[in-house]
Image 1 (tube, rainbow, N blue to C red):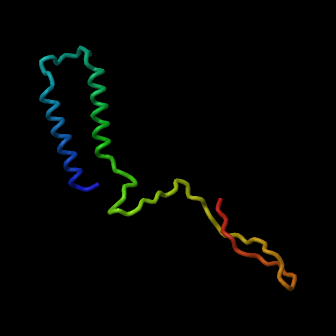
Image 2: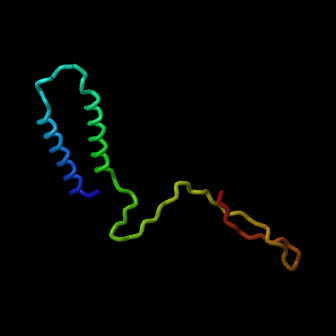
Length: 101
């Protein structure tokens, strides 16, 4: 993620925090527990918005380049000898083949 985007997101988050703090009603600063659900929901929504804005975007093409996904499971491969038949002298002939499992 580029530095300009990180700076802009951090600035907007700071402005939002200052605005939320200035709009808070500080006259009712008692532990009544009436607005706990609203505060919890607001915190979850704000966290989701900030998290969605700051998460890295995977699979986005860079300068128009195509995107190729890497498989999650990489199979282990090795070479083995496989019987191919007999040559003209009656000797067994083997060939190297790639086996993935």
